[in-house]
Image 1 (cartoon, rainbow, N blue to C red):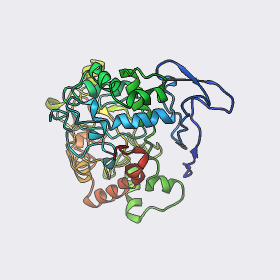
Image 2 (image 1 turned 90 degrees about the vertical axis):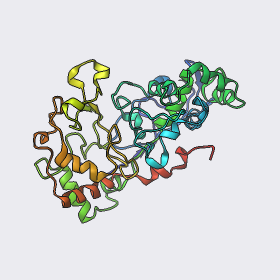
Image 3 (image 1 turned 120 degrees about the horizontal axis):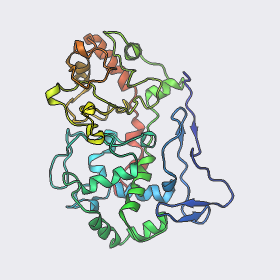
Length: 361
């Protein structure tokens, strides 16, 4: 496995040359290169592969900046007190330190807020994978009564009558008539740029640092497949730069009688009960609590679960090879080492990068 990560200054999937050419905008129109919004060149860490930004929503500097402002805009909520950034806080790897986030009316969300980074490489969104595009995902929290509790016509009215937003949409997307698709396209443009690839683990792969003895012990436990090791790499390969396969899996959190619907809400199949999206293990230092319902307050709780508390339920993933034994049976010293290794995957630049921060602060 190569330890070299290079940042490549071009966008896979489309290229901007020095000659003039038409670039599609989110509203279906085009602008000519050099005579409109400026292309945004996303730096792609080596090994991440081609990302999934649709050709109908190619990045521009103006679109990304508009999306950042909308991400932190409380006008999108009923009581003008909640934004995307309320439940997806930069300091927490764009998740929420609360087990369940509080919406505009003070109601708790149905699931724990997902961490937001490296979204351009993910195949689906939400814990149950019900949205295939980031643009489609951004439509849902606005109308969710537990979250922003608005209608899109109300949001559009607020933004169209705003003193600044029509001009910003004209500059970024070629129209001053704002609708829901344009709003979510801009928000998605900003979210696509939230990239995390500079943790100690990344620097280790670039031959810039060495792991400590405790971290190296944890790494070996992480890749081990027998009882008494972590048995982590079936779903969280250390070769995969995202440290998670994003598949829908049942990891044995609950007994049969307590299984939640999960992925079955999408497929309608009983075999998909209890299955949720496998997340990345990046940025665990910032993103507690853990799991789709935020049930585990810290990494020790997580490893206690995988060690001794796994349920061998009816839809448990076959890769949970030790589920019938309650887990992988880690020693306390092994748990300490695994935690030390897992924390090497946390990227402090993500939570401090001013390009991702609230522009109103």
